[in-house]
Image 1 (cartoon, rainbow, N blue to C red):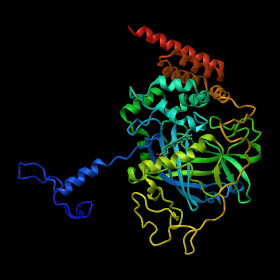
Image 2: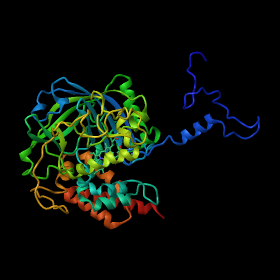
Image 3: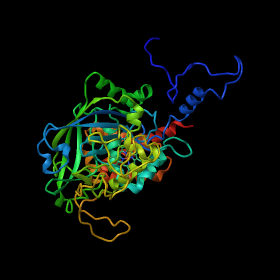
Image 4: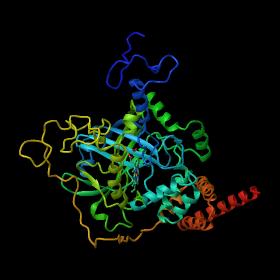
Length: 495
Ligand code: HEM
């Protein structure tokens, strides 16, 4: 065929034959000297890297974050929000949580909403979900929680016994379970759901004043969801449904977008708030802290290589930029360690230099005294000094903190939680139940009972129903009745 480039080995040498192995005579065995064959097979054996320990199934697209409000500098000196109309490039990765790669996109599971903003002050990663809350409020419970959701060590399938045993002993998950088993537990696509930063973050403005902030991304496509039956049908015939939907929409120029909003709490208000404002199992009611629109997030381009730009993408909640920092949220604090550590295991220490993760907005890229490591593929700093302080040249610190120091008190040691008047595991779960329309409550109860009725232990079922009852007596009573009906029907069916 004319005009096709020459096929080469990894060393760039021309390949003479890519269809036949070298053999000892026309009928003899294959030769070890066939370097192209050996290299091709060996490379193939090494194609897989460890999948993400959670959120392994996902899809991503590029786009931009555009500022639509002049007000943001009142609260933060983040450069991306400096003026109305300013656009900064982003990568957004959506995901499900529990499944391994290849699992259906349509699982009943939270959806990840991981944003990387390539700002001129470095990459800011906001690694959130499509839910404003989470199952837990302390990161020390995260590995156990995930084990209860992942395949059982013996049966190698998700076990309702494990899911509900853990839940029944973790009442703080009642709010998120109510969310997850409700209508929004299965979005119709990644485009038809909201995103949330979920945690509380610290914003600091140019005058050195602090606020606490939560991020909300409201879908401009409208919320659409699947019922359990619809999800099972779509997932069975088209497991990559969400990926296809995203790619098709962008290909036809129907660019998905989200309106970016924030809730801002003045720093001084946190100490005396009704409940712990850093508790990830709770939302801040809008009547206390109204939503303020600040921008627009638009996706307009899909990656050329799924592996290079999605599988190798590394989102890290510890990637802050001047003007934003962490809050004392205990889940966020655990995550500040977990992601960089996961990336160094999954991708290697030089993953930060991969094109998708490198700071695209910073002239000259990352500048520091880190050197060497496996697969360092750039000039490794060339002739420049590799230590600091030095009397020659090289990058120097700014001396300007991103955020502000804040006062803490009490003794070091096992956690002694601070009590706010309305700290409680059930109030917001009950409120969520009560705002649902009657038919939505019906589906919620049916979805919960469908799963809970499969549990083998009566005490686990009773404790779980107890959580729903504490959220709202009607909620608990209806789940109890639905579970009893399903168990009775199952007993009638079994011989
Ligand atoms: C992915 C740990 C809580 C959202 C991950 C990964 C780890 C992890 C190790 C894989 C990272 C990688 O290999 O690239 C944890 C721990 C948590 C926690 C220890 C609790 C202490 C949360 C919460 C949210 C969240 C509360 C959302 C509010 C995500 C998302 C991803 C992810 C969206 C996928 C990021 C991507 O698209 O690459 N988590 N996680 N996680 N986590 Fe968490």
